[in-house]
Image (cartoon, rainbow, N blue to C red; front, side):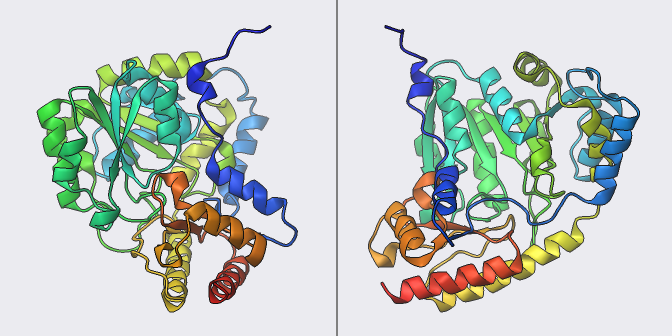
Length: 378
C-alpha cells in the first residue's frame, strides 16, 4: 500500500481549456476556437538568430537569470514603456507561467490569500493552491469587468498577500482603466500587499491607452512584480520564453525559486529573444483588430451580449439568456454544432464563454457560422 500524494496536487484538476480542446480533437470535424495560439509562425529573423546561436555552440549552461545581453535589452525595453528596472532586477523565465509560479512560490506562506479578479486565467488559482494559499475571487462582471474599490476592499483581509492584474485581460480582452488601477494602488499602499502585473497581452492593445501600474504608481515599486512573455506578440508560444521584473530585494528571493525549479532558460533561444524585441508587431496587431471587429459584429448580430475587448485576442460573450451552464453550452456546442469554445466556469465566471480569434480567418468564419446555426436551433 503506497502513501498518499501531495494533497494540494491531488485537489487540482487539469486545465479546462485543454480539456475542451481535447474534446474537440476527439470529435470528428469539430473546429476549435479554444486556445490562445497565434496562427502566425515565428518570424524568420527570430528563428535565424536561434539557428546561428546553435551553430556557434551556444549550448552550455547560461547564467541562471539570463544572458547579460538579453537582460540589458529587456531593461531598455522596459524603459521605453516608462518602467525603470536594471538588468540585475530581471529574470529570464521559462515563459510567463514559470514567472508566475516562481513569484507566488517566493511570496506565499501557507494560508496567505491572493485576490484574483475574475474572470481570470486558471493558472493563477492553481499555483496559489500548490503554494497552500487561498484564492479570493473578485467578481468583475457586474462592473463591465473593471475593478470596483468597494468590492476589492471586501476581499482584503489581514492574510492578503497579493493581487494579480492581467491587462489586457484573459479571457475578456478588457483593459483596466486608470480608476480601476487607482483602487488597487490605494489598497496596496494601505495594506502593503504585492501587485503582480501579468502583461503578456500588453502589446496587443487595439485602441485607447493601456495604463501601466508601475508608471502610474512608482511609489509602490517595492511591492510590484511585472511578468511578460514573448509568446503572444512574437508568435513564440512553443519557445517558452518570458521574463520577470521586480525590485532588487524581491527579485533576489524569486530567483532562488527560479534557480532550483528550472536552473535557467535554454541558452540558444536568448539571442533569438533579443531579435524578437526588435520586431515590429504592428501588422499582427492590426490583423487581430480586424478579426475582433468582425467577431463583435457577428456575435451581436446573433443576439449575444459582449463587452468590447480592447486587447488580447478573445471575446467573452454572455450566454445567460439561453438558460444553461457554460459547461453544458460548450459541451452541446461541440456535440451538436461542431465547434469548441471554453466555458466561462474555467475562468471563474459562470454564464459566459470564451472565443479565441487568433486562428486563421477561414477557421474563424466557419466557426462563427457554426455558432450562429447552433444558436438558431436553441
